[in-house]
Length: 206
Image 1 (tube, rainbow, N blue to C red):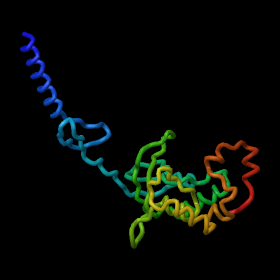
Image 2 (image 1 turned 90 degrees about the vertical axis):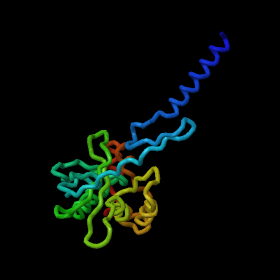
Image 3 (image 1 turned 60 degrees about the vertical axis):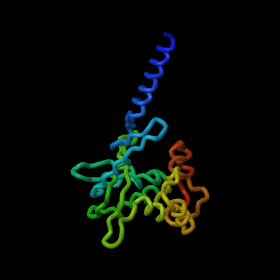
Image 4 (image 1 turned 180 degrees about the vertical axis):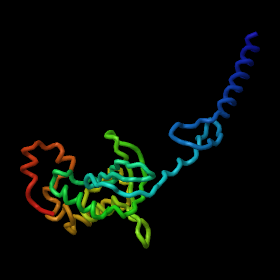
């Protein structure tokens, strides 16, 4: 009797392993068909669907890195990814916003790629400027090169981004006009109280 029970248990164990080996696992974060592999292998999934890019126009520049963009009949409050522009009450803040507003005139077409929403309800996106000849220009790179914003690439995903900011600093463009010493990032500026903002809000001009 003991031998019979042991054989039954071995048979059930083999059937269970075979059934598990044929299972398909589809992670929530990935879409597409799943290739069946034995349990000892890896589950391969299809690559995620590419993000859609749509044409639009900037109807308002809130500040250097935040805009209202009309695309597909909807106006999105867009926070541009990859940069951090000066706050409106920060040195160079108005100049950076005005420079971007002149660049993104009402007749200028942009290519918008939405990538999510932040805690403030703004659409996180990348933007490109259409040009008559040559490939479209990445707006975030353009702002960094011209010294209208700081580069923001903590995970180093954009090739050459640090070199772009280094070129702006060495060329003393935009907010780097008087050099990098004493230049406060927007994150540092937001932590200041009124008295400190008045103290550090004067000095080098655009």
